[in-house]
Length: 215
Image (cartoon, rainbow, N blue to C red; front, side, top):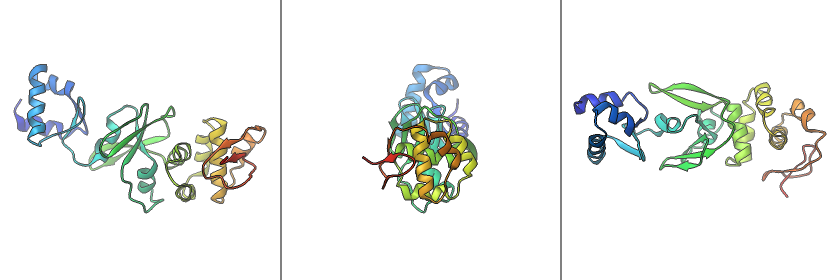
């Protein structure tokens, strides 16, 4: 395969793998040399072992390294216009922890609550705002005032539905943060009010009916 044809073909992919290149050039051993030369000349970038891209924008490929995965937290809040902060890294929820120069992969068991959208001609997977709120509460990676701002733009019925899929401890924390944002989520409270256990959340400030504490 001619170099120009190869680069045109992989430019239509957010990410491509060494295995795919081997199939394209028809020789596994030669494909390794082929990739090395292209990386060395700066025509493609190596993301991690076996994964490559021709794109400079990490948003294009961030949610295509691991499957399933989706962008969440700071970048999602920026995407939905709930924050003016510019995220330093793209945080992606997936099945394992990992990191690259501009991307951090965060382990979660709850890989739902996201959709795809078109970004510069590529499909990108992004958390719904409501799921990004839950991810922020669970991971404690976003300041509580930013989470409160996001809650004010949420579909509260969807936030309640998503929260009720999760453990009681998460339901309590989401309910607590929502109330501090001025939104009492009665459905969540009815679900947890009989549970006498306390849960820890770094931003809890005082005794509350949700039994959320920072102690």
